[in-house]
Length: 213
Picture (cartoon, one colour):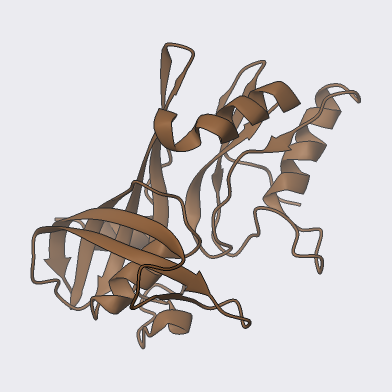
């Protein structure tokens, strides 16, 4: 098991930079997960220590993941998550996105094959995604993304529906895999916990660097 890339730790929180191609939590088929790495880490500090999932990233997405060290902290964070957090991602899209800025508003539904799609009617779960193009290079657009809701696959579905899927995202229509991974990285998490503001940032993966200016 690889060593975790720890961004921040105190008595209540553990924040790590998740690598791509690693599940946050088990799908029932493997124990090789970020959660198990975090659990092993805190148990080495003291056998009575515990760790709790607060949120998760898709298997192929890298970046900031926050764990709680107590059930009370976990409950507080989950109950208030959308109100107390600001979540930013960096995405590499197929093709040149026409607009420099925009907002994607959709209602998402998951089918029996676990594929998420946008409903033509206002049914399903509301998802809102804001974006800004940072650079256009090598037939791709590098975009900064802020999600106002945390719905499954909302970023991937939203850009696919614009005709510019995340590179490497074969599930949602990308035919290019220039960096040999999904081009999505959870770059920053800002969170306010009882009047204290935290800002956690995950270093940009080296595969993303060539798309910067």
